[in-house]
Length: 385
Image 1 (cartoon, one colour):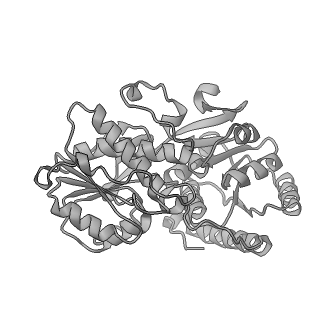
Image 2 (image 1 turned 60 degrees about the horizontal axis):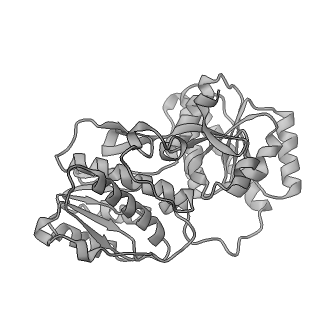
Image 3 (image 1 turned 180 degrees about the vertical axis):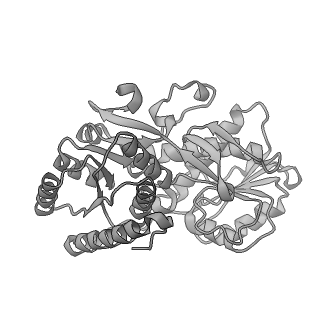
């Protein structure tokens, strides 16, 4: 497991927690059979569904001339793995543009799995005032590392390293890190003392746990009990025995749909939290199985009738993962409109993906809202209390 950096006052706890997490991951790996059909793409890169071909990748007939482009969108619409995710973002961005009183001139530059640099160069050559994209984490790394002379650029995934990043490059992402920090703060405000983490050893879940642990330890919390999740009856019974022996006040499930539905019953009445981003399909059956689970989710899904969404068109995708990406496109348009006017000193707004605020390193921080599965429905947590 990658090292976690903590403030100096929490260093001894960080070292201990790192060791516990490593042991939990090793225990989990030792009991987990190899996955022969694991998908090549996961939410770690673009919060997308399993591989699927892009639907409609080009809007060339509506493209403005190169000399009249305000916004260039660079997305992997031709990628078998990320095409559907990219199309959801594009659809959201264009929907927000159509609803805006000031409609910019937009041109979409589609690319495949290995074509981001060519698409980005074409976008730069178009003379666009702002470029939106790339979407996939590896593509963001590629563009950020080349120190290109860029116009205002809004990438749609996390920036891993800010060193050498062009001063015109900003980021807005559907990341789980903000969810982890929110959950830690919520547990503290609810006076939780002993907490547990049930996790699997994947890049996405590591980032969720790292963000949670950093916030929890920095606020003075004790080192959590960490349990590697294994989906076997014997391992689940062992988990239950450990929870009964050392009952936590609250627990974080760093698991996907299937893992969460299997693990939650073994936690009894413990208040349990998770990131909504780990759920790709919140079907009625899943929602019933997760009754009582508290998640951090985007407002677009939790409070669809909110006043700030009144003029924005809704679209059904049959997948909450794609709906979140549509919401990302909606918010990306709003940020892009601001960046077209120059570098903002500050920016904060209630968006479809949550409270969006410009933070350090030109990264837009996003905080969702708490919701709870109750009787097969997802409801705002604080309203349900």
